[in-house]
Amino acid sequence: MFDDGEMDKKEQARRLLALWRLALTTPAIYMAVGLIVGQTVFSAQEEPGLISLESGARSGLLLGFLMVGGLLLTGILWLRQKRLAFFETDFSVYRARCFWMFVLCDTIAFSGLCLYLIDGDAVGQGLMSLLAWLGYAISRPLTLRQE
Image 1 (cartoon, helix red, strand yellow):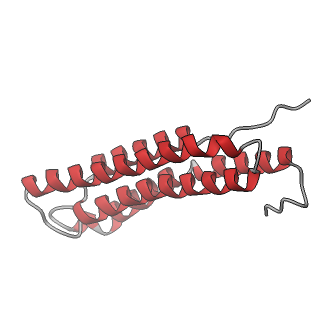
Image 2: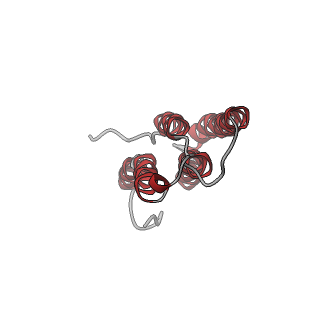
């Protein structure tokens, strides 16, 4: 998809932005999967989730997931700072750092789905999705202006 010899930097930047736009949908897809599982699997259960937890354990689990999401968001911020130096000089390094930022954002969103499956906490999944979208907003690739 990305071959430095085949296309110029403008085209690579355009494709990277298109990939970013596509990646923006993954938190919504994970939320839809959670909704479907909640309506089909968890509807027959007394409490949603695969594990029945007490309220203190639920709060601790949510806090743990949010802390991991915050750490991943910190990694995204670090990568954002480091990638800018390579936009003009080495676009392949810039592109690789963008991909890693997308992976971290998706990891945050996927952990929200895991939180929902474990505990049935839809609010927690929503918070993790919001964190993922914040990460995607931070990781938006730069574009080259059309001349």
